[in-house]
Image 1: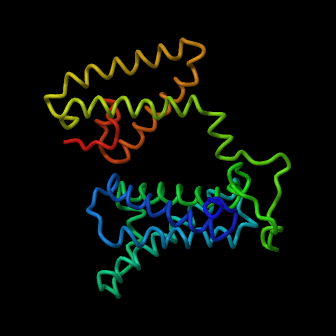
Image 2 (image 1 turned 120 degrees about the vertical axis):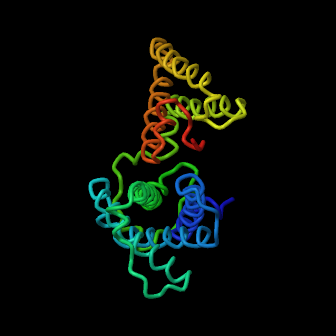
Length: 258
């Protein structure tokens, strides 16, 4: 257990590799909807480790104000690296780098930006905030590099404190997905079919009614805000994925539509 929770740079690198591996598989199945090949198991952790090293070596300038600049840089650099690795893996060593996809190919350009934002945010968390978490075992001796990192006067908002502060909103957010996913699974058919028009007509007023009731009850207003964020997030992701039916009919975006 000490090995898993230790606060060392190598442990944070390991977390970055494992997290980007899982995120790469998720994006391949949910966003791109492609069969898993060896590239999806190898390339994401490589990119994640390179991003971590880039952020770690430039952590002197890394902060919330400069984070958007890092996201743009990571988006461009990761797109180049992915292009090179995919071309090499398919034996196409002289292929041009498809950087035009960042401008021309919708919605994949947005997918790249979303992926880079999440990976960069994870790197920022591991470098700037992770060592302040309550479950992390502090190092007895800090190396020279760690001693140069800025010290927060009152401590940063760690992930554990954020969970405790926003537990009701988080419950509302994930509760909406759990309930709606269970409804569509129990329906036993694919969302968007003509046979499911009854479910669509039922869920629309039901979601609005539940949201209004939660907003009226004072003790449940924070849960209502989490549900509202879930609705907005589901609509945004569904629109980005080119399936607006999911967003307007309150269908969780993990379900395919016809």
